[in-house]
Amino acid sequence: MPGFLTAVDHTLGQADAQSRVSTFLDQVQNQYQDMVSSWTGEWEENKLNFELTAMGMKVTGVLEVLDDAVLVGGKIPFAMMMFKGKMENTMREELRKLLA
Image 1 (spheres, rainbow, N blue to C red):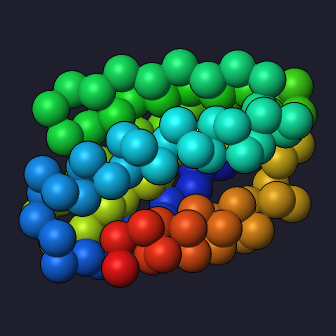
Image 2 (spheres, rainbow, N blue to C red; image 1 turned 90 degrees about the horizontal axis):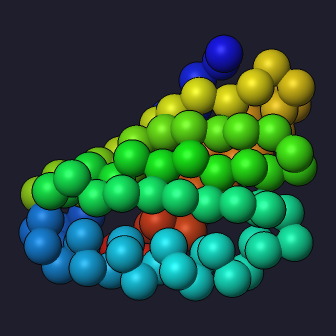
């Protein structure tokens, strides 16, 4: 499976950034509910291991909150490769707004 990776720098510190990301994920789930049919995620300290089904295809990944950056990476099916750039750009822009 092909991968994706997005990184966004911030100056909030790990705890504040993680708090914002946690709230944000609930909002994203509601905002994209027409595209995402299922979503699961589990925090292990500062890493969120997630799995979602979008357009009938499974996406898995890890969102990691560091002291000065948020990293999101994972695997997507080959059939979603044409959406990879848009997906990475959307994640990056939404995280930048959130962490500003």
